[in-house]
Amino acid sequence: MKTIQVDLGEKSYPIHIGEEIMIHFPDMLGRVSSRSVSLLVSDELVFSLYGPTVLDILRGAGYRVEAAVIKGGESCKNLTTLDWLYEQMIICGLDRSSTVFALGGGVVGDLAGFAAASYMRGVGYIQLPTSLLAQVDSSVGGKTGVNLPRGKNLVGAFYQPGLVLADVSLLHTLAEKEYLTGLAEVIKYGVIWDTAFFEYLETNLASIKTRDTECLIHIVERCCAIKAEIVSQDEKETGIRALLNLGHTFGHAFEALTGYEQFTHGEAVAIGMVCAARLAKNIGMLTAAEAIRITELINNYGLPVDYGNLSADAIVERMRSDKKNTAGQISLVLPAAIGQSQVCTGISDEQIKAVLK
Ligand code: NAD
Image: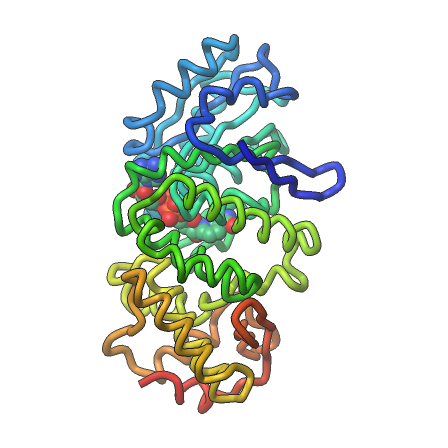
């Protein structure tokens, strides 16, 4: 088992990564009260696959755990489900010493995390990520929240988990589309931060596509280490944490303009990274050869590189309303080289439109 530490003073926590490590979970729960009731939050699909086992493991070790199972999917990451979750927390008798275990992908993690952050002004919270996206990204860094009808993740809190356990053996049941959406975020880490990791993704493509265990462990470990390093320096995203948004401003526009139905989040981010690379090349930040390498890697993993028939005007307008912008200026993360990136402002609409068809 590998362990990575997220250094945030009193809020520091470990991320444990390995194969079939769920069985050892109770040994890691030092500060979790076995007297107060805990709540395992999951979605229907993940719970049907792993819920009973996790409950058995925890109960076998003497923990009092109840379960709350949400339907699942982005459409239930909302205030209605949150309200239902609070109700379950009350019915199950959670008190201020209780802990919430989030077993699932990013939807369960974000929702359960926000419930834990706000119920009785905060109870314990542990992440058991089960999707690739959750293991490499959403379970680390403490962003929790729900969507509002007017936009994604508009209500939430920074609330760090007490620990993260990423068991890569759970990734074998993940649908191919969901695996790919996670791989888009994996590629992002290589582009923004780590040349050697980008090369690893190029060299080991075949084994990564077939979910080789050693590759999965290496990928999750490297991505978590990069995210831990970034979050440790900038917990609340006032500086370098923004680099994690590479491809996201374009991507959010593609998602929104296609009604969140045509692309998964990762697919939209993948196309967004291609656009960002093209833009960086056009303004002389990135070499043409590197822009091609980024596009080819995304394409070779089977991720889309093209957004179809959306209008360039509509894309730019949507990008202007991104919540990461300040004072009306579109703020974009662009690659300066493979393994290096920076936040750029002052990019004109014309420069953006030039990379859109
Ligand atoms: P998700 O939670 O909807 O999971 C995707 C699908 O995979 C679901 O149907 C789920 O049931 C299924 N699934 C999960 N694990 C499985 C497994 N082991 N086997 C079989 N099926 C499994 O989506 P996601 O892609 O994990 O996360 C997306 C969410 O994460 C979005 O809401 C996004 O806003 C959020 N997010 C948050 C952060 C953050 O920092 N908090 C970062 C990135 C994304």
